[in-house]
Image (tube, one colour):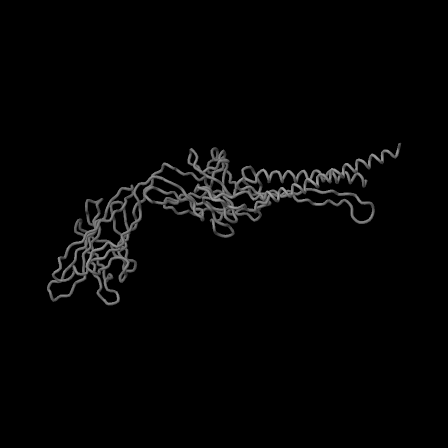
Length: 443
């Protein structure tokens, strides 16, 4: 019994050390594989007898585990859609073959890094056939609410590299100084003019023309009126007026030159009421041919909008949103996972958000080819986090995660495993010699 148990223990030693050598060879062969997670083989003793009586060798068994929670170092690249997770969490991906057949219903896999580029159909795909998945943005660039405990809201990220994009103007801000001397008696009372471009719903360039006409005092003894008439016309409506206002500015010591009153007055062509002015916000909602535009001329007492100082007419800061039609020129991903498309007009539009997937036990994930994983009973349920929120890290673009393998450590383990294997083989040889001696007793 004791001799045969020694033989079994020696055989178990060969098997377990061979298994450990397999994991070491896997680790070494993948030492240059991006995102590879090291496999670790541990030994556990087996006890068949304890206490008094004859002793029987129990042997050893191997327990192999992939250390998915270990992260390799990040290296920089030149591709903006080379992505790596910096910290906890994993990127959602799908198999390209399954995307072709199932589309948005393709099952979700997980990975920690990938080099993604648009394929012939516009999908962000890696060389190993993984398609990046994300939440599509709404037309205004916002991310709609999506379920966090299921992959139902995820879709393969698909970019139309030939797309055109235009954005209508919705907001405008006027930072303009009017010359104070023009409202004094005897001044030339020149009308100041300004044209501000805006973009309609089709990306066509239009303009709002604005005139400022001073109101001089009636006699030389009267003080400066500090009063102007502002008229706005729309080029898309053949120059029809969209607003007419009387502006007065204060000459007080503490707030000199700021707006004192803004009074809407009826428009002339065509005749009608002018949009109201909000004294608290300084906003006027005018209606151009393409729809409403909110114009900020500054609140009462505010120096950020219209002002009346010094001698010169000066459009200091005139801004607007919107853009003309532009061509797609590039893509980038920010640390919070927002995928943004850039156009040659300077517009940047959010098209997707990439969430990070987190599980309670990453080492319990089921491993597949190409450094991909699936949630399992051992890993626990998954949850989709916004990158940088909760327990997750953020997403690094222009980056790849290197292998988590330490080659020097693996070579050291290989030497120890080789010695242990040789020793187990020596045990078997010794048992064989002892059994031969036992057999020779009969002779």
